[in-house]
Image 1 (cartoon, rainbow, N blue to C red):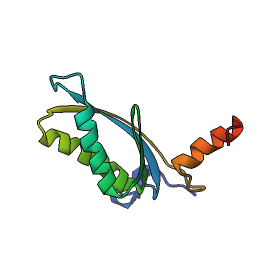
Image 2 (cartoon, rainbow, N blue to C red):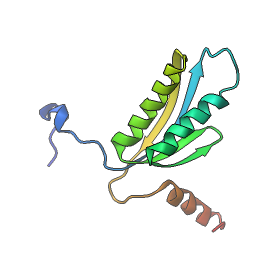
Image 3 (cartoon, helix red, strand yellow):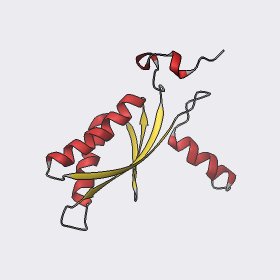
Image 4 (spheres, rainbow, N blue to C red):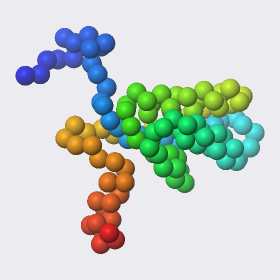
Length: 118
């Protein structure tokens, strides 16, 4: 039996235990087309976070507890703001599931299996 969300206090709605999130931070108004220095700083933060991650050509995929994953993304904004970047736009895709925990490697492996690239 499901109750409507209007019957539940927002503080009683938990976030998912586990998630993956793919994010790409876009510093705006830095005066340079290059953002590699900012990306390197974000990667240093991600490495220190203890989360499972992979950097790719268009962003970073994080995996772990919902609150920690999204906190690190917010912290990435903060470290760039502290460096003088006044505006940051982010693309974030978050996913969760309740039937099983599936890592980002598992997802890639499932597709590679279908492609015969095991």
